[in-house]
Length: 199
Image: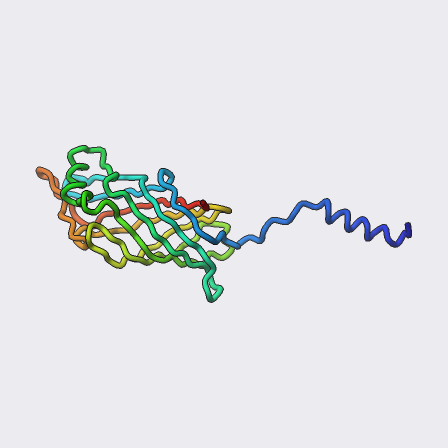
């Protein structure tokens, strides 16, 4: 073996022995992600003249499709999600029954749905980043345009999104809940934690 060939062999051997480089940071996962019921949740808080009440459910389903924006600046997602309206509970049986029958009318309208888009410019995507969400929210038989902000965390095969926004019952023709001296009022504060994973 020629002496001059030895450095070349050493360099090649070093490259083969080196660990594989990680994928470049900032390349967010794209494709279709399923919202995971149980891991996802929605909480609502209703003000009233005696301190208010809150409710919660983890029965959220749907999907998010993520792709790079056409102009190359950021990412765009398409969202279709549904909340099982009859599963919302306030830990009060009488109030829950009234919510299902008188306010949300879940026998006729079993789901609260949202369909829309999310756009973001996450940069490297190594930390939670803000996203703009716009779409159509349907409660009972009323559909309205809504817009709110989300905080998104991108993992290798999962997206996490956290949202806090306000919804007015009057906008969706929902009567204000009342019982004895308790009378609810707008707005309702809605907090969502969404976990969406690759199927």
